Amino acid sequence: QVQLVESGGGLVQPGGSLRLSCVASGSVFGIYSMGWYRQAPGKERDLVARIFSGGSATYAPSVKGRFTVSNNNSKNTMFLRMDSLTIDDTAVYYCSMWTAEQQYWGRGTQVTVSS
Image 1 (tube, one colour):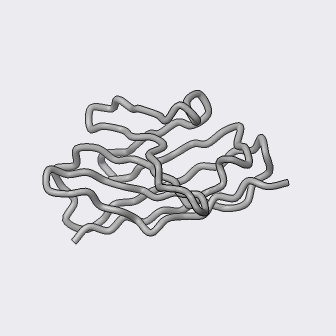
Image 2 (cartoon, helix red, strand yellow):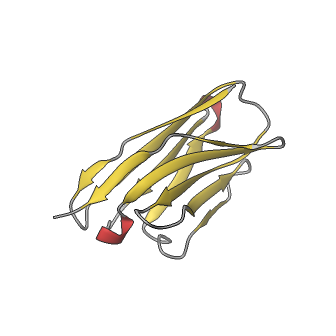
Image 3 (cartoon, one colour):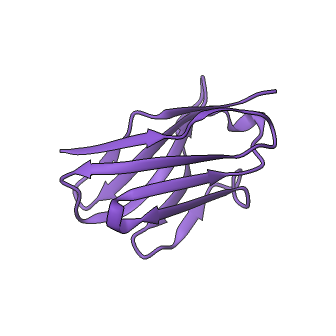
């Protein structure tokens, strides 16, 4: 069984920064990629950033240049550095992991951007 646990969410003012973490535990092997999704109230869950086993990363246009995804493969940990946050970044952020068999999900961490 695989578990993904997110942390680092919270309340931040517009223009501020946060760093999210995701730790994978359990029968973790054959990881193809990991990523961050977010879901705002009344909206669909969207992919924000994704990092592949070789180290390459992709970003949604809305966060490119402001968010940076990174990982520590030896510790099965992924991070999301979020800078220049805006009110539109308010959402629950979910960690996800892809293997050859399936996609796994964390329970999410709330990020609220408000003055």
